[in-house]
Length: 247
Length: 289
Image (cartoon, rainbow over all chains, first blue to last red; front, top):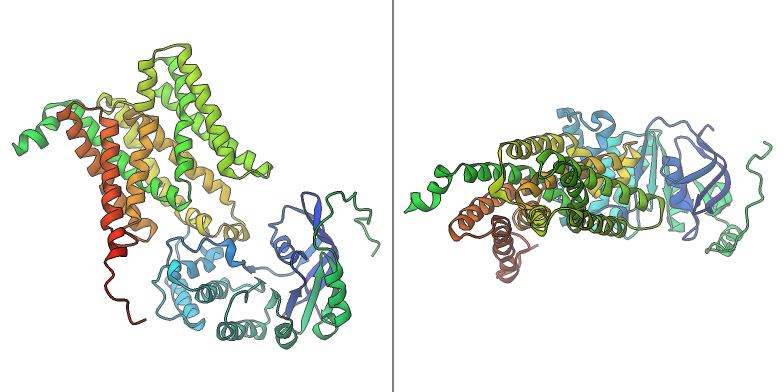
């Protein structure tokens, strides 16, 4: 099994307090991996670090993917902004047209098709501020479709989403797997992870376990994850774990 | 009668013609800037930015007297410096950008007033603060029109990253694009428009013609480009009507122009096609779904 991502002794910190602490793990290529853990466990931070958006990253990230697509949490998007569904989806082709290039008719066709395949036909010209949370999540999935990435990172794709929408979007995700794309999703619903995601990575700032979901989501592991302190210690001293592990 | 009141002032007086052309150019460029300012939730920061031109303009005034190039360049540099400085402060501390903006512009404002008081009179200060659109001469006109040109071309060039930076900055960052670059390019364009405007309307009033039509347009249109298209004619109409009224009534032109822009805002607030008072009150039956 080849790895799409290899993390070696990864530490990501805000204000010197680590949000992700000495994590070493592999994420298999062409598979679906769930990242789970309590709130504040560093799941979103880990994704941000993979994208190169985290402020301070130590350790090593090796990534074989050429193109990465990222679904942010909805709170990071100003949904009142006056932009149409079609334009939002079309942005998925950014890597092709960049800042100044023009979208080609083929890109437009793809955008219409992507909107159709997430079940939003007829919404193309609607402004995004008229959509519900679930509909907007479909829009973001259509944008991901257009990005044609070999690694797809999803940050809480199903938070506050109803079961019908979850089912529809899971169809999209499974299709990505059939197309040999790597999917990494931050999730909170353990039942769903057990059902749909063969691989899991349990994070509680430090790595609890990574591997087959059945093993990772054992009750001992979940207990350990919950026990790890959520709040960081204001008076924590410098970390003495060496940054260079003999491997 | 019609001719006498509406056409004659422009036909007979060169300064009125220049003022009219200047306000047309300001309206076209400025209203697009205004639309982005409100969409970025920066309308009040724009105000702060306008005030921060003062020390630069005052420095220019100290060095070059009432010279357009010196004061404009000074104002532009001061405005861009304020924007950059508060951006840097916000980035390297946990301060939010609005707070650092306030700190920067208040400092700039105080410096400006101090510098003006070193030399020059209250009249000069009033001129910088409130401008004199009727004193727009040919070089000023060229500055204003060039500004409008640069603004429109510049905005067209950075339109896409700017829009994405507004509503989904994380996406831009994930695409490896430095959103802050476009943010500061936009702020520079905004400062440029305020500089062009302060000649004519003064630093305090310039933003009125930029922001009020843009705010008003949000009651009529729901996309960035259509908002700009609605805002520009409103800005120009307020400027033209304001000029005429100030001419006939012997009132200062800047405030009159801005007040007419406020009228457009009020009318849009009351009667606009979306989210207006009228739309809220006159919704007889709800739709089926």
